[in-house]
Structure formats: C-alpha cells, structure tokens
Image 1 (cartoon, rainbow, N blue to C red):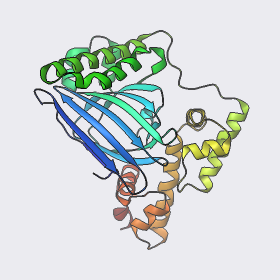
Image 2: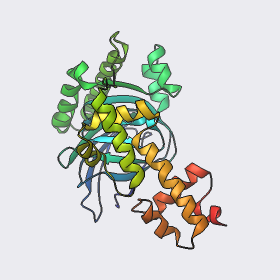
Image 3: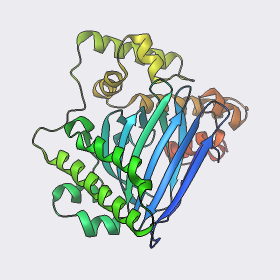
Image 4: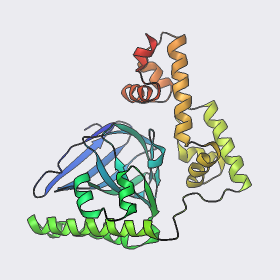
Length: 308
C-alpha cells in the first residue's frame, strides 16, 4: 500500500476476532506498520513508523467512530481540524467523522509510535455513556490529558502489546476487550480529575520573539518547512512553538501555512497557465491529489473548477 493514503475498513461487525497487518511506505524514506485487531465493536491499532521528516498522510474512515488515541512518540497535526493536534506523551478521546482528512506525522529521532482504540458509536454508547464527560465526546468535544497523569495508561498499553499473543480465540478476545475497557476508563478518570491538564506552557518574552520569527520564516518560504527545523532555527522547543503559535496568532502553524498555500495557489491559478500538478509542487504538496482535496475543503471547489 502507498503511504500517502490509508483507508480504514469497517470490521466492527465481526463476531469474533479478526487481525490484519498493514505495511505502507513511499520513496521518501517513510515506512509505517499498523497492527490491527478487530473485535465486536472495537478496533485496536498499534502503529510504528519511521521517517526522515514530517509526513503528510491521508486517512479515510468508512464510518463514524469514537477514538481513544495515545501518542507514544512523535506528534500528529491535523490540517483540517486543529483540535486533533497531539504531541508525544498525550492522549485524547474524540469522535472521528466519516470524512477523509489530511494530517502531518512528525517523529522523534526518526521514529514515531502510537496506540489507539476505536469504538463503534453503538458499543461506546451502550457500555460507557454514564456521565457528562463521555456524553460530551458523542457531541463532538475533544478531550485531552497527559499520560503522566496516571502511569497505569502506559502500563496497560505495554501489557496489551506484550501479552496479546499469549491467548487465542475467545480467550484473546475477552482479554483484549477487558484491557481496552480498563484503558478507556483510566483515561476517562484523568479527564474527571479536578486538576485539569494544561496543554499551554507559559510563554516568556524570548519565546514570543521566537514565535514571531517563525511566522516571518513561514511567510517568506512556506514550501517544505518542518516544525523541528523551525523550532531549531528559532531556538524554541517544538511543543512551546506549536502551542504558543496558536495562543498568539489564533491558529496552528499548519493552519497559517495552509492559508498561505491556498492563497498562493489561487494567485497562480488566476495569473498563470501552469498545470495543477505543478502548482501543487510549488505550494508544498508532494501529491497533487492532496493539494486538490485541501483546495476543495478551503474554497469549496476544485482547482480545475476555480480556474474555469
């Protein structure tokens, strides 16, 4: 499979246990392994990937799900929905819509890793909707917490990965269902604690100056910039750069970059006759279809329709 697209197939109705491994790669050094286990109403996914830098990645869910995502290494920035941005050591619970979306996967020292549990809305509603916290997720609210708030989350994820093959058949299904529920309940407990998780570290004067410098860099050259390189050039850590940029300018780095790319693309479509594929490359997209999807979400029409 090509690593530029990933289609999440619906196997929630499987009555027992079904396993599938997906290996995706491209010619730019990106390689990801996805170990999927489908239970009735539950999809478990262990993901490990290698990359030389930020990887743009398109995902197309076949149906709406409730997702508990745990970022173990690297980070993930969604281009279409800023609320789904997540960094290393964070977890989130959210409703994933049945629409294609593009996000950018970053690495720590060339490696990224995550674990997630997807629940069918019917299974989630029947088993976990008891208070306002779990109900809020069904209504579209994204909840975040740090994995350090309860080390049990790390332990459960590690145990599931190490011991899942100690069982087969019904016993394996029962084991994984129980551990998935334990992990979700532990995560929900963290959302319930009075000391809310603060994702926005306090910005110092030099941090603010660095973030403004990054904005100037992006404005001058928005073609193939990466957050690690931007942070290194500005002398600020990546987490503070990402959260601080949104705090100061009201949008994420990728949101700001998307505005620049789309307006530049619009200008080229109006003032030149170069092909849409060439425009995609100029504004920083490795794949023209990703550019077309982003353009259509942004302007509600394709580049071809806009040019006509």
